[in-house]
Amino acid sequence: MLKSTSQLAWYNFNYVIILFLLSLIALILGCQATTPITQLLPNTPTLAITPTLLPPTTTPSPTPTPEAVKTLTLWTVEEVSAQAEGDTGNLFRAILRNFEYQYKDVKVDVILKKPSGKGGMLDFLRTAKEVAPTTLPDIAIINAVDLEQAHLNGSIVPLDGRLDRAIAQDLLPAARKIGTIDGQLLGVPLGLEMQHLIYNTKTLTTPPLLWSDILTDKVKFAFQAKGINGLVNSATLSQYFSAGGRLVNEQGLPKIDGAVLQTVLKIYQQALDKKVIDNALLEANLLEDVWPLYVDGQVNVAQVSVGQYLTNIITLSNTSFTRLPTQTPNDIPIAITRGWVVVLVTEDVNRQKIALNLLEWFLATNNNTNWNKTNYSIPTTTSAYQQISVDNPAYWQFLNEQLNTAIPQPSFSGYDQIGRILQQAVQEVLTGESTPEKAAAAAVDALTK
Image 1: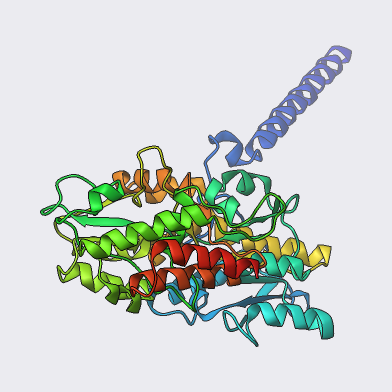
Image 2: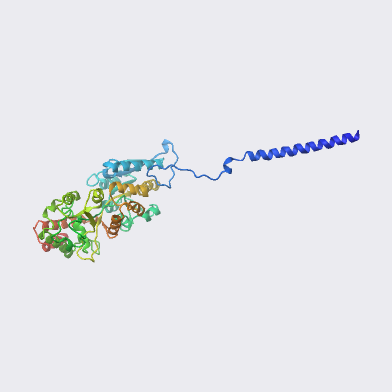
């Protein structure tokens, strides 16, 4: 009897041990079963959908509450707005729409101003600062020739130390040059415009690099001789600078190099005598007045803009491009650059950050490439320039060489007076009213009176 009881106790003990081991195994298996499946799979990259024109490295901000939305005020001109003609307006609208998608707490309020004159952009920036500073924009797009005056008026804020360093370093030297006054970066162009020669390759087998190549019986030459608003035309200005002329002396005061001006005017006189040019060019105050003369075959060499060439390149035949002519092989051809520049207006540090985001958005590589492709102009950044140059590498390499020596359209105080005096001298020679010697001397005298 005692033996049976001991055996029963032994069996019960073993049974408990077995149940405990089975429970422990079940617990272990249960823990393994609850391990997330994703831990057993290799990491899978997440695909991100990026809207058109958005920089590839940006991430949209979360949707804010209505009261958290900030309004960023942009003053611009019709030519650089959603109201611009054709694809330019559509692209401008798309760039702003995608900016607001990226920065969901910001709404851009665009206000159009006249490009110049009373009630124009520069005038409004000055007067609003004096009488109604709260109405000023955060950011504006102005003509590059107004940049210095806007700076003197205290209407804009320097970009040095504020603009994203990577973008600042990516700017083309010519783009930085057009936006710099007194050593300070004050504006950044959306694109650049510049002029060069085109010529008919059926009548001229080699490019006319020197004036001696142009002053022959094989050439009929057209350029924008009248100028705009009474100021000296771009062709004469380039020729004056290329010949070593200066418009400012060592003290920073306006000057005219009489000898250089006389040399340029003598070229015009020779061109008239050889019937290379016609005094009817004095009616050409726009580049659009020159283009038909070349297309219709009335001339075989013409000074045109980059925009005109790119716009019409598909339809042009027997045409090539070259630099502006110089008097000697050692002279450096100097083209004149122009453009619309984006400037920072607000002095509020917090609003500056938002405004700079928009400026940098315009300069994002894809946006800057698309903008200049659409407008047939020269990109602002090196990265955009490299993208756009793939289509026609020979032409863009040529433009790069010209940009290296180009200078911005003069805009210093007193330039209006000089510009009118120089154009008067050109007009007197082309109409035969005066000789190059007398016209140049009269110009120097007019400036010193």
